[in-house]
Image (cartoon, rainbow, N blue to C red):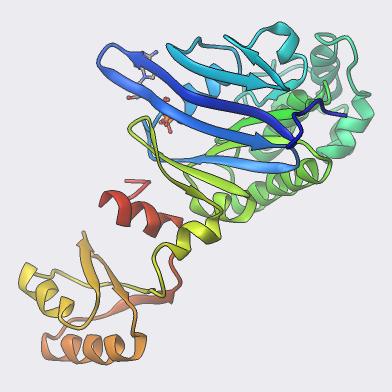
Amino acid sequence: MPTTTQTGTLLSVHELTKHYGDVHAVDGISFSVPSASVFTLLGPNGAGKTTTMEILEGIRDPDSGEITVFGTRVKRVDRTIKERMGVLLQEGNFEPYLKVKEVLRLFASFFSHPLPVEEILERIALTEKANAHVKTLSGGQKQRLALGAALINDPDLIFLDEPTTGLDPQARRNIWSIVTDLKAQGKGIILTTHYMEEAESLADHVCIMDHGKIIAEGSPQELCAQLGQETIIEFTAGELTEKDISLLKRGCKKARMDGEQVTVETEDLIATMEHLLAWAKDRNVKLKNMVVRQPNLEDVFLSLTGRRIRD
Ligand code: ATP
């Protein structure tokens, strides 16, 4: 059983900082990660997510700040603490001519009490591939193997830095399912992602990071609720002028153009749709790919920063 504080907190950081010269990669962030939860750092490239993870994985030292892990306050994360952590390595780094079970045996040899390789194979749904060479695995299977290697020591705290980047939707869902099982077993998972759907599907708590700071946090539902009763209308249109957009804005709360993509926010969907259709007819705008949806985390980020998470 994990050793936690009374509140079930596996990890907490307070005012953590890391500067590279003038770059404030991590700029005084504080958060905590309870057991049986998925904690997510969401942010654009360069927000400071990986630096934060690497400090907590013991790869980099912070400049300042407090780290309390498994109930003990530490200056840096050392070997003893790492025994109870699992870190996902990027896929493709395994020797291609090793067999799947050989990779897991190799990782098992690094720890004093590893889980049986068969148990890991089952968890990552690769039992049938136990004797397959790494080079014959698909991208999704390689990533599941990397996850298996991270789980070999039965860690209490698991770090997943962009675990599904580059995977197809099915492979992504397979990883999500393993993450959900880990949470059900009481593990704490720290996930970074710039996929909104990933954070929305998995996260109990999201910290939105930008320029080294946490600019908003809460459950995905709480964060989206910050935008109130809004509905988002999106469509693409050919060339539009600033004047087109300013006329469109008369019938909604906000409207913005991003290349051919137009995003409209409204608190009165029917009135805005009436205005939008009349506007399109008057100005001969061809509305394409129209979607009406509730706000998501991308909208929260856009509303906070004026930028998209994935530019
Ligand atoms: P990504 O999604 O692209 O991985 P990130 O949110 O993980 O981005 P970091 O990799 O933590 O961001 O980088 C945060 C900032 O620190 C960036 O401006 C980056 O250029 C800078 N940085 C990171 N590592 C170093 C380093 N070793 N030396 C100098 N600057 C660095």
